[in-house]
Length: 133
Image 1 (cartoon, rainbow, N blue to C red):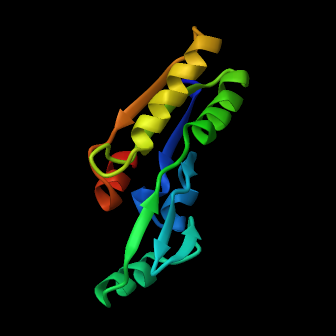
Image 2: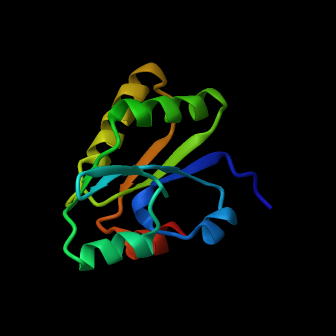
């Protein structure tokens, strides 16, 4: 049995249920999203409610996680001696992956020996969730 010395991260776009996530040691970054002009963060609206609103013609959009948000969280782990593995939301759908890469570059200037791996999932929703599992 080996010691796990890394922290696993992803974005809330992985669409995994709370039940599945409860059994995983993963930290999710919540992307904000709008439905008909109202902003939600994380699980303030369930997936069935979100998709039902879309089917009814609701206008939706998302907002990416900022480099600063990634950097602040990743730095806490580095200071605790952990490596970082982040499975990001597809770069083809959001700038969140690039924001995580910016955070990585900034942190490597301060912590050149840190191991930070940012993976572009090239997918979202259930596809991203399956990769995370």
